Length: 168
Image (tube, rainbow, N blue to C red):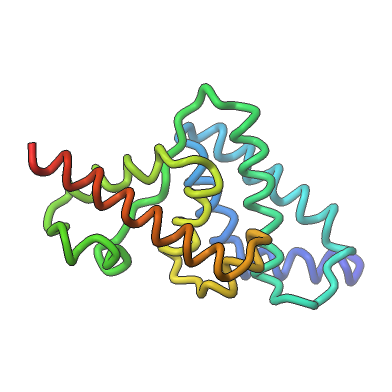
């Protein structure tokens, strides 16, 4: 195996969790997830020679993987997306207003995130991964200010929706 292939395989192996998280976030069906993982890896391989070290490798990897996932999702709009399970320690954006104390509430919140537009869902995925605004901006190609504004709007939208449902 040549050096470039070895390097690529090594960095993909170390960071494969990123690929699987994104695939799980955009596809419910197991076969579709597998196809998306393959497409992401293929696109990463095609883009690998152009990686310029201007940003962290994982930032570049998120950008490529999210672009592939969003493109794939748009092509397959009929399919319902599923975000990976949300753990209680990363949903502080809602716990001040709504108690997230049971599995049903977590699933409801997960459903609301699944129903967001592609970019907003990608943004929330990165937010829940505890990425900084700067990292999110680099990955998504937006300004940090835009990221902050979008995150706050999404959080408020999710809170309001959750509160409406939980008050009924």
